[in-house]
Image (cartoon, rainbow, N blue to C red; front, side, top):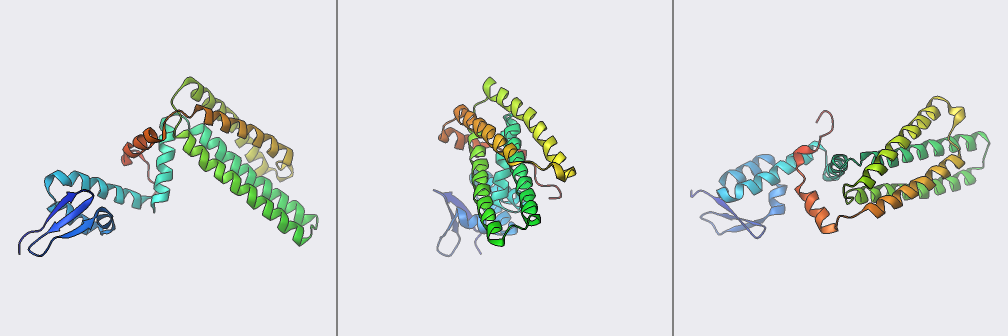
Length: 231
């Protein structure tokens, strides 16, 4: 039987043999098993093997993260870390943890006070709405940080975020170890106001165009991204 060859043309792999040619899209190549991909790379023209190997490496690397979404999240975190902006991401992460602490404390207080079930349900609905807003703000912050140019202003903001995060982590642990000193609504409101101000400052520092951001993001090596422990 004649040996098969694979030719990459305009995003398609053309599998040629003695039978009529069969076009296999790049997406089809991505859906192949590891052994099948290895075989496809082996019989591909030399000029196309690097492209196929890169796709194959990416697929195997993503598998270590148990999915593309987790891989992309880890990639964003690594890029932000390289730019020295991780304290800002960590600060907003701490804010979400404090919110969880606050809501947990309110639930306990409401239950102990004998608050009617319907009223407790209304409180939960309000908590859910606020939690969704905080999650959206956190995800939006990640996108903004990926487009912040290195600058003194960005460095100063990051350093200040680090200092404040240390304070908030101390408050978080105090709340964990001393339940009677639960975080209050006034504290959460003050934290939210300051967080909103920081978010606006990050937005002002956003300089990188969407096109340039995408180019830099796509070129960031998979190998720089640390897989989860044990993978």
